[in-house]
Image (cartoon, rainbow, N blue to C red; front, top):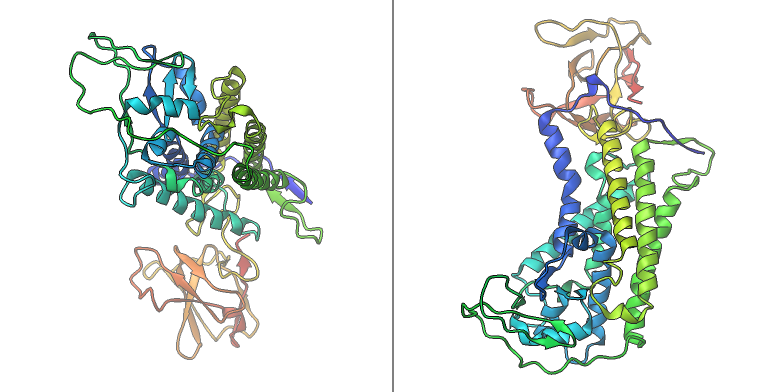
Length: 459
């Protein structure tokens, strides 16, 4: 059975230093910032009145970004004569008198106002978009590896890992990455006083030039856009791939909030922290609504636009605000529960999430014996009766002599790696230790013939 534990607020003794807070905040928001910066296309204004803040709000919703990653390869695979202009016009968001427009019709109308395009109709290696794709891919792969460890009990939920699932969703950029580019530029509507030249195309007020000469020359050399219909096997292929991936992520998120998540099948209880459960609820809400919205609009007539058709709808703006507020609550709960474990990792688990039990090598040795004031160590030898048990208060590692007749226990402030079944487990000492870090070992003393030390798992 799985249970959700009560909110475990960090105590005063578990306070986090300022430098650690900076590390946590950086790790927390890095995937979110990269997802937004690399996923939102550059705006091009063909209208004198600029969009208000709430008109821009929907572009910060992950669903809008994922829609772009779906629509761009769909447009490319259906296009019969793809060129650099098509790529440039597909990677911006046009602001017109009717609002945001990313349709194929608007792409064609804007051709006369395109002043610069990329040399090739694909992403170039030495470009900003290529660097963004590389960062998104690396973050997504790292997050995927970390999340995968959670299914075997190795997940360490903390403030630093809040947006790992979002980084995994960012991998949906890869099918579109070959045609994502920011090298195209368009002449925009200027607001300075000057000579007005209005060009109307299909009811859109497109452009106003200043009296100052424009430094670029508009181009109209590309052929008319031609594409296969939306209801074509090419469009169906992209639609099937994306909806399958989104449905899988949604199903995985729903499973994460179900009673069967992390069940070992033998009746053992699994207790989740509040942060872990809220995380599962947050991404269940996000991925489920994302799948429904993308799935619904992919079957509509306006599905060929690279801008989500409902991005300016009132309900979508409200949904975006609700998503933001949910994320704020999620961050606050994680901030209260995150603590630094004895092994140096950040976690919301009360025991710090340090490894313990079979297959691990970190142990507490408990006792009230005082340390030697000069050498900061405990020394005992084989004069102890066979089978005698000693426990020590704190975390120590042992060093025995060549004949195993004596053992020194030193305060341990690093990490150790190995198994309690091993004779020895490799450890790393803290920065103030003067011993050779490559040769220090944590001794498993329970098998030594002259004495017996009780070892207790951390948890």
